[in-house]
Amino acid sequence: MNKLTTLLTGVLLTAAAGASAAAPADTTFVAKGNPFVNYKYLGDPAALVHDGKVYIYAGHDECPAPHYYYDMKEWCVLSSPDLVTWTEHPAPLRAKDFKWAKGDAWASQVIERDGKFYWYVTVEHATIPGKSIGVAVADSPLGPFVDARGSALVTNDMTTEYTSIGWDDIDPTVFIDDDGQAYIFWGNTQCYYAKLKPNMIELDGPIIPINLLRYTEAPWIHKRGDWYYLSYASEFPEKICYAMSRSINGPWEPKGILNEIAGNSNTNHQAIIEFNGDWYFIYHNGAINNDGCSYRRSLCIDRLYYNLDGTIKRIAMTTEGIWPEK
Image (cartoon, rainbow, N blue to C red; front, side, top):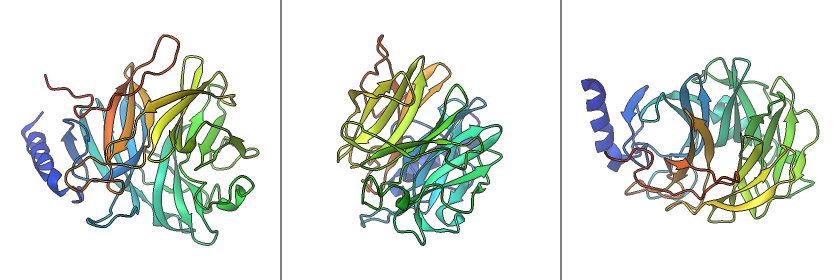
């Protein structure tokens, strides 16, 4: 580590007490423990492994103390080649970049296909009541991202058959199966999924509801070997539970709790990735002193381990994270 990076790291760690301060462009720091970003409030993480790096995309919690409400206007991105040294890049996407939306930068995910990067986001629609899902596209995982459609991919009126609430169309997650077929999963109180066309910006078939035990929100799909894993936030305050299947189309067999209630946060939102042969569980809590809470969340990483039968061992949330002191 060079002197400049060392100095900058010390500045950022010192700034933990004032965590609402915005980070300058291309801020580089060394993770020391959980929460591993401690100068800024970030929640609802999604992760992408691409070209030897991990990218984490998260909503920026801007709720000023002592208020208590969700206040998210933009999404942020961090990258790392080793999960130790991280760089936060300029915010590549804001809710207002979708001209048909009126705000709210809720949970999102980025996925790569054929050299393009597609960012699926939750926003509030300007003319159709309720939450909607939009998609932006870029040539780089760092952006700049632009609205790929000029309209919403999913709107609340498309799912009123299943629930009457206005916030069920949130938390999009996208998975590309081994045969090249892409799927989008999403939903609050009811989980939905649908096929995506190869262009990644249109649905390719009906919206299908999935019945999951005690499902609340925040679906995430990953695959290991022949098993598909669907993890999700359950009940409220939220735990992370998961189900397994031999097919992306189910049926999904519930496997119980994966992650307990995250400290000082009513919500729980996960990303699961494999990187350099190991598996990681990325999530948020509300643990930054002194103002962390459900509306001012913080990013954490812990290891994820499997049992011999393919089930997942319960996550051990730690303060040292994946960076134990030598």
